[in-house]
Each structure stands twice: as C-alpha cells, then as structure tokens.
Amino acid sequence: MKTGGDTMPKRMLIENDRLDLMHHLLVLRCDDRLHYAPIGREPKRILDLGDAYPSAAVLGNDLSPVQPNEVPPNVIFEVDDIEAEWCFSSRFDYIHCRYLAGSVGDWPRLMEQAFKFTKPGGWVEFQDFDMRFFSTDDTFVQGCAADQWAKELVLALETMDREPEPGPKLEKWVRDAGFANISHQVLPIPVGIWPKERRMRLEPATSRCSSKDSKLSPYVL
Image (cartoon, rainbow, N blue to C red; front, side):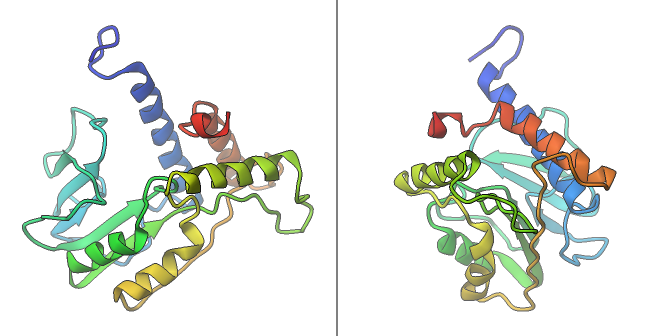
C-alpha cells in the first residue's frame, strides 16, 4: 500500500511520528536514560532496545511494519505478535518493554514468557502508564471533564479486553512471574506547562503534541 512516494500509509506514518515523540518524552522523564536496569556496558543479546549497545545483537519486535529502513548493523526488526507463543532460538540478557497500555490483553502470560526467555542473571524492564490524571497537591477535581475523559477511555479499552492501566500492576506481575531483585518507580508526567524546571515544562509540551494525533481518537469520540 502506498501513499504518494511512501511505502507506508499516511495514518501509519503519523502514528510513527507520534511514537517518536513519546520516546522523546519518556527519555526526558527518565533524565536522558534509555533504561534503568543495570545491564552493564556489553550485553550480548537484547530484545527491543536501540543502538546504544554495539556489543549486542538487538532484536526489535512490533506488530506493525513501521520500522525504519536504515538501522545499525547489530539491529534486526521483526513483525510479530508478542502475545503469541515466543519461539526465540535463545534467551536474552535484557528484555525491554514500554508503552503498551491498551495493547495487551494478558499481561501475566507476557511476563511468564519474558521470564522463560531471560538468561539467568539477566534483566527485564517494563515501563507503562496509569491513564488517570492526578495532582501532587490534591488540586485536581474528580469528576471534571479531564477525569471523565480518562474514565471513559479506560472503560472503552476494558470493553475490548485490553488492559488500559498496566503501570500500577507491573510490579506484582513481574514478581508473580518469578523475577527477583525487583525495583519499582513511579514518575509523574506533567500535562501542563507550570513546572519551574525547564525539562519538566518540555514534557507536557511534547505530550500534547503526541496526543493531538493519537491512536486514542477512535476510542474516545
């Protein structure tokens, strides 16, 4: 399927750009870190992380064929469903999974498969969201338009048997799957431009640009 001179449909191109913005937002929120797991400088086999580790054979997995044509020589992309049975030939030193809210139906099974394909001594890292708005000083008004929007979105995704808010549940799922040495952090992301710190003001600006052409539109109209 072509759109003009591109081999990717226009809607998919827009979504790809939005995901690039979300990547930028999350890296900003994590203080320019791609990950928190202490995987060392030379991991050998990674599932779903970029080119920061030239020593590693990196496998990127996505349900849609949206990957760039030019990638580092140690990176390979494949189109596959992560909820299907994993059939990798060997285990990974590090498995990285981020921003899948509303996309996965059976998170415990996903965690079990990640555990099965993590090397002894290896690491996994899951980063995801709570869909609800809140404020650290209790000024957010429950029942306001933004609150109702978030609640309706959660209901819409639950109707589709998708988990809308995996973030608060990740720690339990990881522990239940058998992982040890677990670290859990909650990182609030501002949705207004009031923070005094410049980095924190950039985050909501990026978030709003990302939401403008969001894949959420069909669920909330």
